[in-house]
Every structure is written in C-alpha cells, then in structure tokens.
Length: 144
Image (cartoon, rainbow, N blue to C red; front, side, top):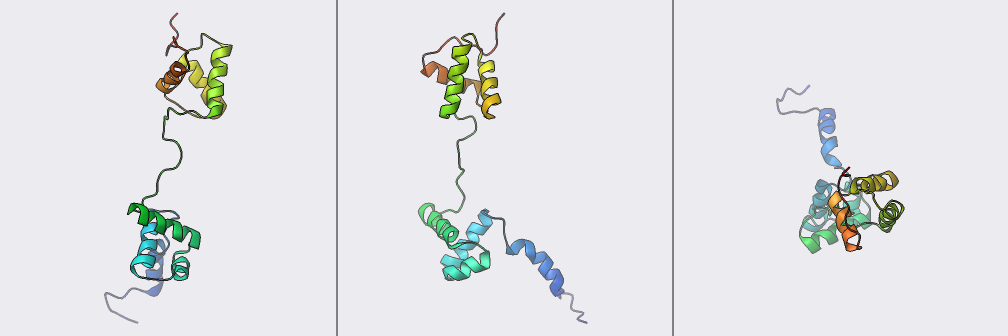
C-alpha cells in the first residue's frame, strides 16, 4: 500500500478525468482542443480525430473556422429572436387573416400566426410588415 499523500488511486483519477477527457459535442472546449492538437502540437488528422472522437470533416470545419475568423466560437444559426423577416408561410397567414377579417387587430393576427406555426414575432414587426404592404390602421387593442 502506498502512503504518499500525493498518491491518487488510478480508479479515482480516471473517474475525475472522465469529464475532462471528452468535452461536449460542438462545445468551445472541443474546438480549442482541436486547434491545440492539430495546429499547435502538430498531431496528424487521424490522431486528432481518434483522441477527440470526431470525424475528419468536423476537424477540417473547426480548423477552417479558426483560420478564417481567428476564434472558435460557433456562430448562431437561424433567424434572431423577434426577427422582422417572415417566412413565406407566415406572410401568407398574415395576409389571409387580414383578408378574411379586415378589422382584425394586431393581437388577433399575432395569435393566428402563433396557432399556425408556433412562431412568435413582436407586434411591431407585424405592424411594419403590414405597413410595407400598404395595409394600415391596425391597432394593438380593439377600441370599443
């Protein structure tokens, strides 16, 4: 039995290291490890892919992103929250709602879009879309 205070049993060391050996998929930590293994330490593509558990395609994509931008932070995909750009289906729903009910309020149009597509847009976005298409006098609330 080893009585060294700095000694860590191999099983305990493995349990502690398991979380740091394989970072989450597409995480910033994994991307930096790819750069370190391949670019700074000079490992081959095969070695880097084997040790990090990624494909060659992902390795090349991470390296290309690093060389183009100088950073490994992943870019967000998709439209930003409350974007003013509508999909064609959403535009169709807005126009159908206005044509079927010319007195529909912005809230009613918003609810119709949400019911049909589960997409949320700011009322101001809907208002500007209608204004760009020549439809005006839509109110946020129904004045009775």
